[in-house]
Image 1 (cartoon, helix red, strand yellow):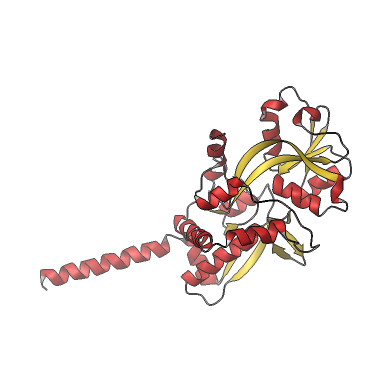
Image 2 (tube, rainbow, N blue to C red):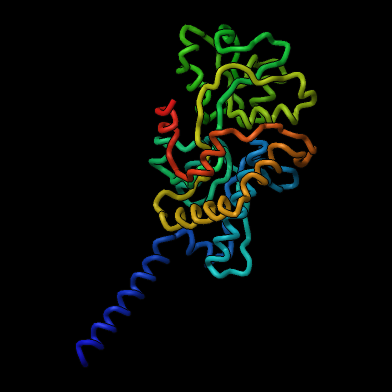
Length: 304
């Protein structure tokens, strides 16, 4: 055999090996391809980001974004159909369920931070959140300093109250912390008078207020406690899958789909009650679309 032929065979063999390694590198993509299904982690009460609309149906800003991403991945894998299995997750179990492979892609309201990034991966940010305080409109509470001696609700497994305690204006302000098992339960603590305030992401506060029996009875007040990137979670040790998710996100942004998606979930009536959340697009989120990145919350804090 001539040297030229040997070189050609070796080159072809190397190319096949590289191609095979690329496919094999993504356990998630392999699982999706072989099973014809993907498991999406969703929240039950994170309106309008990720929530149930009844009868085991789920929707929201991040859920629809993930469906668009998965449709793109389906096409990349050459599949005619892809079944999406929705797996409700909580603030406590969302990271472990992505870690152990129960959930392939988590589309809720998870802050991308350095601590969580030790265990999971995060796609490029499509939503930047501001953590705020919700109170009853007649409470007289308008700032952190007025929470002294009050009961403050938050959801188990979230970092909101820690952020409140660390805020410079919370220095010397003592309050009691009460926990809801999910965001709807935390809001119920406020609604029923068992809590004087509910500290959480602004979108979740606005969504729960919009869905309350009397939305005008509540208001969002006080200083912004934190600006955080809320991102889609993916398995940490699957860079190929993360790359495909980010490629789909880049395509959505380039095709101008994000403003319409925002309007649909934040500024127009949404199911099941046809309420309007009424949260305008923030400059921070708009900037995240224009400069796609997976920077953690710590990076945002440094830029304040």
